[in-house]
Length: 257
Ligand SMILES: Nc1ncnc2c1ncn2[C@@H]1O[C@H](COP(=O)(O)OP(=O)(O)OP(=O)(O)O)[C@@H](O)[C@H]1O
Image (cartoon, rainbow, N blue to C red; front, side, top):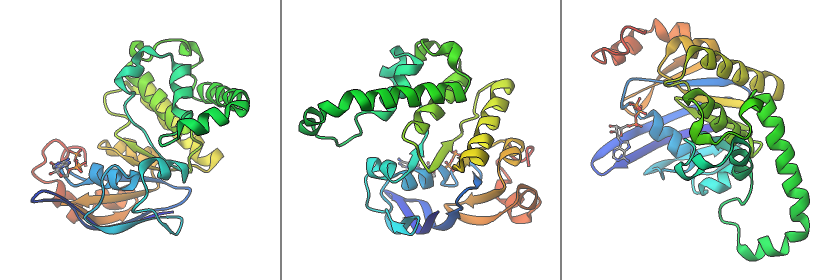
C-alpha cells in the first residue's frame, strides 16, 4: 500500500533518515518503533508530505507520490492525526470535525462561489458524517463541548475523528496514546481495531509502549539510526538481539523491552 524506497532526509549536516526502505501493508495495523532520534517522526513526515526527502521515493498503491503536496496526498486517501490547532480550541467537537472535512487546502475562492448551489447538500453530508464519526468514537456526550475543555484522551479521540472525516484509506498515528489514561487508551485501541476490521482501514502508528503495540499491531517495523533495522511480529522483534542493542543506553526503553 505505502512503500518507502531508499528514503534519505538531511537536516543541514544531520542525516535523520538514511536509505530507509519499508512497506506499510494494506489492511494491516503496522507499528513503527525504535529508540529516540531513530527517524520515525521524520519518516512519517515524509509519507504525509510535510518533509521533502533529500532522495528516494514514496509510493502509494503503486503511484509515486513523492512530489505531491500534503493536501493532494490527503485527497489520495492518506490521513495523519495532528494536535487540534490552537485556534480550534474554541470550536465545539462537532465544529472541529466539520471543519476538518470542508474547504480543502488549495481550493480557489471562485470555485467555492460557483459551487454554492451544491453547498447546502455538501454541508448536510459533512454534518451527517461528523455525527456518525462522533457516535462511532462515543463522543456524543461532549459533542457541543469546546475542544479546549476536553481531557487529553478525549482530544486524542477528536484528533482521530478529524482524520477520519476525509474518509481516508490509511491513517498515520504519531504517539496517539501518549499521556492519556488507561480507560481512554483501551477505548482508543478498540476503535482502531474496529476501524481496521470492519472498515478495512490501514493504520501505521508510532508508539513507545510495546505492550500497547502488541495489542494493536500484527506487524512491527523497527527503525534505528535513520534506517530499518528489522521487522516482524512484536514478539520476534522484542527478542531480537539487534533491537535490544539498538535500545541499549536509552535506559527509558530498555525496561519496557
Ligand atoms: N526539523 C528538524 N531539524 C533538524 N533536525 C531534526 C529535525 N527534525 C528531526 N531532527 C533530527 O532528526 C533525528 C530524527 O528525529 P525524529 O524526530 O524523526 O526521530 P524519532 O525516531 O521520531 O524520535 P522520538 O522517538 O524521540 O520522537 C533526530 O536527531 C532529530 O534531532
